[in-house]
Every structure is written in structure tokens, then in C-alpha cells.
Length: 166
Image 1: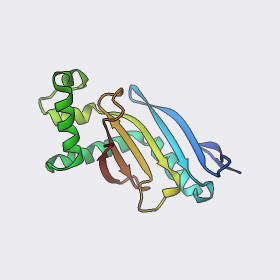
Image 2: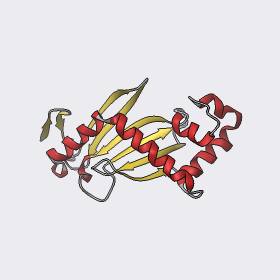
Image 3: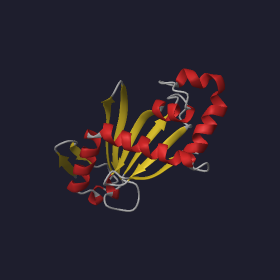
Image 4: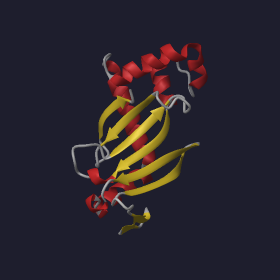
């Protein structure tokens, strides 16, 4: 079986009924991998695909909301964002400044501004549910794939949480 969608085209299911779509989307001066996945195509509605397409099309606004959510967590010394930033400062030391795209003197803000959006994974079967519908993956160093922050979004593009990949 397959699902047809204006944005994603023909989404064919695998032998186990799952669907998967992947594309590299240009975002600013970088390329972001966008994956859409669901373990069972029967759990994917046209509405979910429409929401997913809208999210991909408004990646810039979603990225801004995700970064604002990170900034909002800076006041909490025990937040995963704060812990991630402190860990990056400690592990990178003097190399940190070379990874920053803008140096304003506020190191934590500079790191958040310098994070690269690596990927967006859309879990199409989670439309309207309590679990994340989309997950954005951010890294300061694209080669350090273990040192990432994940921003979990609901199907209405609201930030549910920001976590580290640890």
C-alpha cells in the first residue's frame, strides 16, 4: 500500500507496513536532513502529513521557537540545556571560540546561536498525541554526534521539552 501527499509525494510502505521519507532541506547556509517515519502507515492521517509538510515549510520559525525554548531554560541551573552548555565549555575549552558563529561575550547565548540544526525527525503516527510529533537535533560540532540537544515538538509545533542525547 501507499499514501499519496502533495508535499511528500508517494509514500510507499515497507513489508512491515512502515513508511519512511527523507530529504535534505536547505536552511540558511546549511543542509538539514528531514525524515518522516511511522511504524504503521495505517496510523498516519492526511492531517498528520499536512501538519508535517507545514513544519518542513516553516523550518525557520520552528528553529527560532526551539532556540527561544533553549534560552528560556538558561535560568534553571539544573536544566539539560544549562548542563549541555557547561559540558560543551568544559570539554572544548579554548576550541569553543572557534566553533562560535558570533562572540558577544555571553557564552551561553553564543553557543545557542551557534548550534547547527542537524536534523528534523517527524513521527507521523504521533499526530495529536502526547508524545513528540517532531524532534529537532542540534549540535555545536557536527562531527560530535553524541553531543546534541534534542527539541521535542507537539503536532501544533509547541516545544514540549529540550533534552540532551545522553
